Image (cartoon, rainbow, N blue to C red; front, side, top):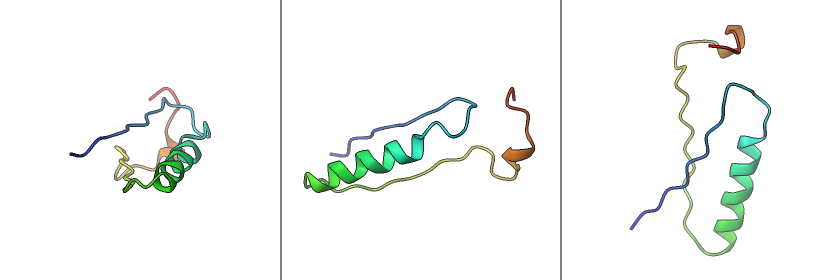
Length: 55
């Protein structure tokens, strides 16, 4: 049976979500678990760099 760990974040970038997720995945993998990471970006056709942080 699959189990999920979901990492979410707010509008602030550079919080370290990716580093924390990769570190957790590495630790779980070393513990013998099979890991598959997936990033879901809701802004598919939008350049998030041009958006206001309040959007």
